[in-house]
Amino acid sequence: MRPAVQPTGVERFWAEEEIIVSKTDLKGIITYANEVFQRVSGYTEEELIGQNHNIIRHPDMPRAVFKLLWDTLHAKQEIFAYVVNLARNGDCYWVHAHVTPTFGPDGEMIGYHSSRRVPERSAVEKAKGLYAVLLAEERKHSDWREGMQAAGTLLGSLLSDMKVDYDEFVFSL
Image (cartoon, rainbow, N blue to C red):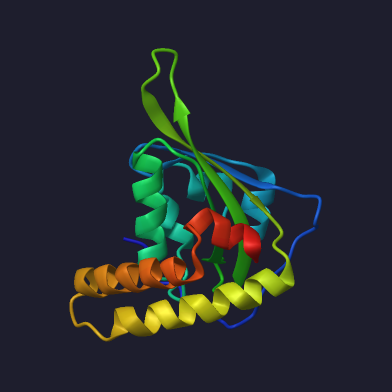
């Protein structure tokens, strides 16, 4: 078991033309991590390959958003999302992620592919606001599953009020 990484509150950045790329199997185990991912996350290829992708999960990222992400992928659909990740040293970095299922020659889903770009700063600020509301809802519950469910319901309600689905919301930022 790896020791918990404590957030430093420092944000790191990378060049706008760069793309962070990773591939995982169906259980979220990393099978590929490009050089940009390694450099920005602070992990070596050896430290990433074979690890669950949640190795970079930041505690400020609502579980409800990850549940939406996984539900969408399990439905064999792509998803776009703004995500804050946690580097090996505790720094954070924001990404505009595009995650897609990967299919084998027989048409069966075999894993996932994620490409992450530098997000617009205005979108990050809006995402931070939404995520703070969702996290507050999650933290009202002693059981994390109940909190995730309640925040998911809240997210659905907020999107319904705006008359958009999650992808439309992400692209509106």
